[in-house]
Amino acid sequence: MTRGHSLLLALALTTGIHAQTGWSPLSREVERPYAQALQRFGSDVHTAVRPYATTTLRGALKNDSLAPSAAWDVLDRWSGRQNGRHFRWGPLLDAQGGYETGSNSGVRFRGGAGFWSDVDLGSKLNLHVDVQAWGDRLPTYLDTLAQATQVTAGEGYANGNADLYTHHDWNAHLSWDAHKYINITAGRGKHFFGEGHRSLFLSDEAYSYPYLKLSTTVWRIKYVNLFAMMSDIRGGFGDWRNFHKKFASMHYLSWNATDRINVALFEAILWSSGDDQYPRGFDVNYLNPVLFYRPTEFRIGSPDNALLGFAANIKAGKHVLFYTQVMLDEFLLEQVRNGYGWYANKQALQVGVNAYRAFGVDGLHLRGEFNYIRPFMYTHSDTRQNYAHLGQPLAHPYGSNVQEGLAHGDLERGRWVFTLRASMAWMGNDSLTSFGNNIFRPESERPDNPAGGKQDFAFEMGRYKESTVLHAEARAGWTIDPRSALRVEAAYTFRQLDPAWGSADITHFFRVGLACHFRERHPEQVVRYVLR
Image (cartoon, rainbow, N blue to C red):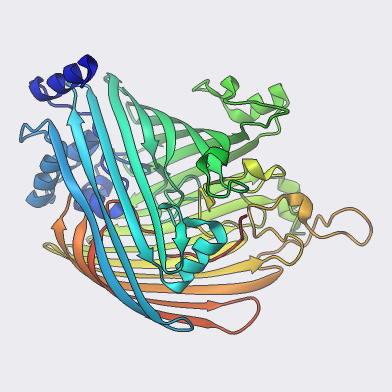
C-alpha cells in the first residue's frame, strides 16, 4: 500500500465528523421508503433531479410526520449518519430461475453478484463504489434485443450468445460539498431528469458513463450542470478501445415557483470527438455553466446536436403530483400549425399523474403516464451525435415515432411489496428508407420525392407500418435488504407483440428467486434497429 493510500484510509477511519455528501442509488425501488416524503405537499425537494443526496432524503423524512420509522433505519444504515460508521458496504446478489412459453419456450435464468461500498472521507467528502456482474439466459424478446444491439438493456455489452450472456456494470463517484449550496461530483454512473417512469430529457435506460456534475441549490432553485463522455459501439466489434467517443453537456434548471408548482428548463448538446482527419475532443465552448447552447452553436457555426426541454409539475392535495415534459429537437411553429407532417418537426410530449397514499390507503402508489414522440426525434444528420449511448437511447427506450400509455400500481405491507405494471405502445417501422423510427439512421435516408430531392412532408405517427407492444408484469416480493432492494420475488410477465409484418408473438414468462433492484430494471424493450 502506498503512503497516499495509507493516509486516505487513516482519514476515513479516524475522522470524527460524518459526511453529508453521499448519494442514494438511482433506483425507484431503493428510493421506495422515502418516495412519499419526497413528493408530499410541503416538501421543497426538486424531485425531478435524481439521484438524491442523502441529506435530501434526511430532510424529507424529518419534515414528514407520516414517514415510517423503518425509512429512518434504512437511511441510517445506508448513510452512516447516526450509527457512526464511516465505511458501509453490502452485497448485490441475483439468483433467479424461470420458464418462458411461446414461440421459443424453455428455461431461463439469471445469476449475478457484486457489492456496494460507501466511505466517508471527512465532513464534506464521500466516496462510493459499486460493482456487479451477471450471467443470463434471457427471455426471447430480450435475447433478440441483445442480438440486434449487442447490449443487454441498461446493463452493459452482451458477451456470449443465447445460451449464456455475460455482462457487467460498475459505478463510482467522489462527492464534495464545495460550499453550503454547491456540490461537485465526479465519477461514473447514470442520471435521471423527470418525474415520470420515463424521461424525455435524460433517463437511466442506457449504460453508465463517466461524468462531472455540479449541483447548486439555493432558495427555491436547483441548477445542475452535467458533463459526460459517451460511446457509439458501431464498428467496434466488442472492443471498447474501438468505440467511437462523443461528449454531452447538459443543464437542468428547476424552480419551485410556489409550494405546489415547479417549472424547469432542460438543454443538452452532443458532439462527436471527431476522427483522424478532424480530431476534436471536448469542446471548451460548452464548459460555461450559465449559457444557452443554441446561441453558442450559432456563434461558433456548430453542426452539433442541441435539444431543449420544458417541464412542469403541480401538487394536488397532499400526495398527488401531475407532471409534464416537452422536448424539442427542431421546431418551426408554422410547420407545426399547418399539420403537413414536416420531417423536421421533432418534438416529444409527456403527461402523467403520480399518487402516494392513493384514495387514502397507506402504502398504495398509483401512476398513469402517456408519452408521445414524433418521427426523427433524437436523431441527427451525423448519427455519431444522436441521443444515444452504448447502443441504447438516452431518453425513451423505444426511441422515436412512438406513442405509449402506461399504468402502475404498488402496494406495500411492511416488507412485502406487490406490483402491477402495464404499458401499451404504438410505433412506426421503417422500410428500406427511414420514416423516423430508427435514431441510428440519418434524416437523409428518408424516402425520395417523385418531384426530386427527399420527401419533406407526410411523416405521421405510425408510418411506414405500425406495430404494437403490450407489456404487463405482476410481482410479489419480500424485502431482505432495503439498502439494495434485495428481495425474494416471484413474477409473471405477459407480452404481446403485433409486428408490422407477420403474426402476433405472445410470451408468458414466470420467474422466482432473489432479485436485486439496486439498479433500475428495464424489461420493457423491443427491437427498433440493428447495430453492427
